[in-house]
Picture 1 (cartoon, helix red, strand yellow):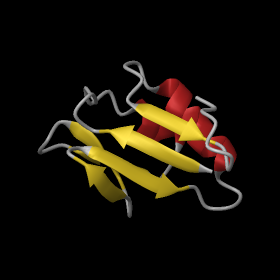
Picture 2: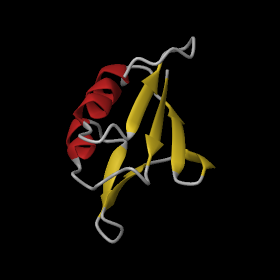
Picture 3: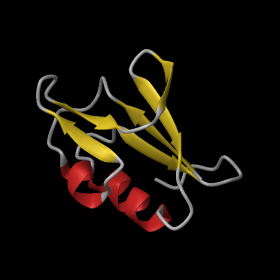
Picture 4: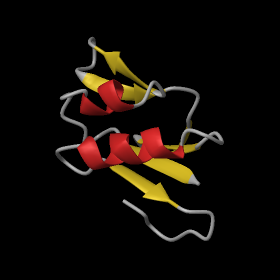
Length: 80
Protein backbone atom coordinates (compact mmCIF):
# COMPACT_ATOMS: atom_id res chain seq x y z
CA UNK A 1 0.00 0.00 0.00
CA UNK A 2 1.28 3.47 -0.81
CA UNK A 3 0.21 6.97 0.08
CA UNK A 4 0.53 10.10 -2.06
CA UNK A 5 0.53 13.54 -0.53
CA UNK A 6 -0.01 16.63 -2.69
CA UNK A 7 1.63 19.21 -0.45
CA UNK A 8 0.70 22.08 -2.78
CA UNK A 9 -3.00 21.33 -2.15
CA UNK A 10 -2.51 21.10 1.62
CA UNK A 11 -4.06 24.01 3.56
CA UNK A 12 -2.50 23.20 6.92
CA UNK A 13 -5.48 21.96 8.92
CA UNK A 14 -3.19 19.19 10.29
CA UNK A 15 -6.00 16.65 10.67
CA UNK A 16 -3.70 14.08 9.06
CA UNK A 17 -1.14 14.76 11.80
CA UNK A 18 -3.72 13.85 14.43
CA UNK A 19 -4.54 10.58 12.64
CA UNK A 20 -1.11 9.21 11.70
CA UNK A 21 2.36 9.99 13.03
CA UNK A 22 3.86 9.76 9.53
CA UNK A 23 2.59 13.33 9.08
CA UNK A 24 4.15 16.22 10.97
CA UNK A 25 3.25 19.88 11.29
CA UNK A 26 5.50 22.28 9.40
CA UNK A 27 4.49 25.55 11.02
CA UNK A 28 6.99 27.57 8.97
CA UNK A 29 5.32 26.47 5.72
CA UNK A 30 1.81 26.25 7.14
CA UNK A 31 1.48 22.74 5.73
CA UNK A 32 1.99 19.15 6.80
CA UNK A 33 5.05 17.07 5.89
CA UNK A 34 4.99 13.34 5.10
CA UNK A 35 8.04 12.07 6.98
CA UNK A 36 10.56 9.91 5.07
CA UNK A 37 8.61 10.24 1.82
CA UNK A 38 10.08 10.69 -1.64
CA UNK A 39 9.24 13.73 -3.74
CA UNK A 40 8.27 12.29 -7.13
CA UNK A 41 7.05 15.55 -8.68
CA UNK A 42 6.82 19.17 -7.58
CA UNK A 43 5.23 19.00 -4.11
CA UNK A 44 3.97 15.42 -4.68
CA UNK A 45 5.30 13.00 -2.08
CA UNK A 46 4.99 9.19 -1.98
CA UNK A 47 5.55 6.74 0.85
CA UNK A 48 5.09 2.98 1.18
CA UNK A 49 2.82 2.45 4.16
CA UNK A 50 4.56 0.24 6.73
CA UNK A 51 2.85 -3.03 7.66
CA UNK A 52 0.39 -2.52 10.48
CA UNK A 53 -0.11 1.18 9.75
CA UNK A 54 -2.67 0.85 6.95
CA UNK A 55 -5.60 1.75 9.20
CA UNK A 56 -3.92 4.97 10.41
CA UNK A 57 -2.91 5.90 6.86
CA UNK A 58 -6.50 5.46 5.69
CA UNK A 59 -7.81 7.66 8.49
CA UNK A 60 -5.24 10.32 7.65
CA UNK A 61 -6.31 10.29 4.01
CA UNK A 62 -10.01 10.40 4.86
CA UNK A 63 -9.52 13.25 7.32
CA UNK A 64 -7.99 15.65 4.77
CA UNK A 65 -10.57 18.38 4.05
CA UNK A 66 -9.07 19.19 0.62
CA UNK A 67 -8.29 15.62 -0.56
CA UNK A 68 -4.54 16.24 -0.70
CA UNK A 69 -3.90 12.63 0.37
CA UNK A 70 -4.56 9.57 -1.77
CA UNK A 71 -4.12 5.97 -0.69
CA UNK A 72 -3.52 3.07 -3.11
CA UNK A 73 -3.63 -0.67 -2.49
CA UNK A 74 -0.90 -3.04 -3.66
CA UNK A 75 -2.63 -3.44 -7.05
CA UNK A 76 -2.51 0.32 -7.67
CA UNK A 77 -6.24 0.81 -7.09
CA UNK A 78 -7.15 4.00 -5.23
CA UNK A 79 -8.63 3.25 -1.82
CA UNK A 80 -9.10 6.87 -0.71
